[in-house]
Length: 514
Image (cartoon, rainbow, N blue to C red):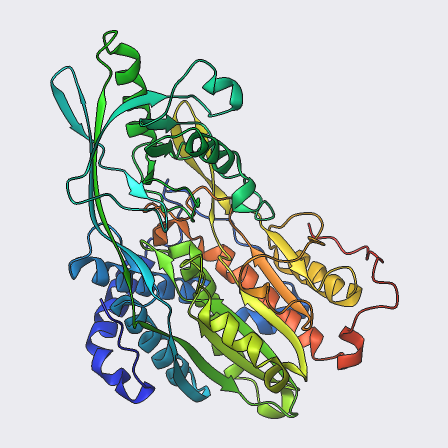
């Protein structure tokens, strides 16, 4: 379990693994031109005035997504079949850090190194089993996935009466005694807005209401995808074992409760062991392209993720590498500012002690960011746009649009640069930028560093085992990476003072995206 984060000089130990991953990526890249439904993605035409950015090829970036998914699966296949991915503090985290450092070096970045960070004790479910018994029939709820930081059970487990409370609104609880029971909630999933805090989503409100009424275990169904996908949820801060179910399992339990004879309700058996594992480590992965001055631009992206984590955040790290490749071929004299690339540990280990890398960077802000013109956060930048018709999932031939933040209303010039670049390269985005504090890894920095984050994710595949490389459109990777390169070039035409807040903090720019 303990992660062993090593120095870059040891990266050669995994070259054989990387070679295999590269071979797999090349084989799968042949299918990258098509959506999972077999329809070719639309590619935005490159304007003649920006032909230089044609060197950024989405099909060449996409295999990086595949390679990261292979790292996740390698960890899964080493004895972690239930709770897997590029999880902070694990051998998968360490392997991913070595992989990224190796790619930074291969591209030609300087000062490539892996900076080890200590972690506070981390939550790990060791294993779990959930089944339901009704009328003598026992059925395993195979999609059950514990929410992050959920309490476990005693070794003997729990045997609880099942009760269904619909969407879990106050009206749904009328006449229902949930005390000491396994409460099932459906139809309440996270909104498609990254601006809605997890604690304020309908599912969180419903779960806390059931918890306050004495429920002994909690379940809610992830209904956004058909079938029986597994969904890893952020902490709900509930006091009892809490799980997410796939749509099929959620509907099956509803039907079992509805059909059960009076006085003989279904019972749920739950067993889950949980440990808080101390003395683990994670890492920041650094690489730099020196510039003509001491001023800097930072490009950051979180390395962690659950399951394949192809979109969140394999796509962001892939785009980061695409940017590094592009600017590594630009002469140092033409790079006004040094570009510092950092693969940060991440934030999926939510709760006390999370985001060790972000905290270290923020603690060293004076040493790192006093001459920083831009911090660009690559955060799940390409995701498939889907629809459902007749209960079937369909895929569009364009990527999902995303929310974006570009310095906020006090930096109108940055907002306009970003809006123009999105328009130029066909980045699907919200019409206007967010003027709220950005979520994710830009959060600790936006108040003192001009920041940009684009999140192309409508939360359909977010945190599910369905978030495979095939759900990451290469065209989305190409569009956002080209746009980011143009943004960096345009920002480099501005002096640091041009990127500082305007005199009127409440002013709004007219910047808008397509």
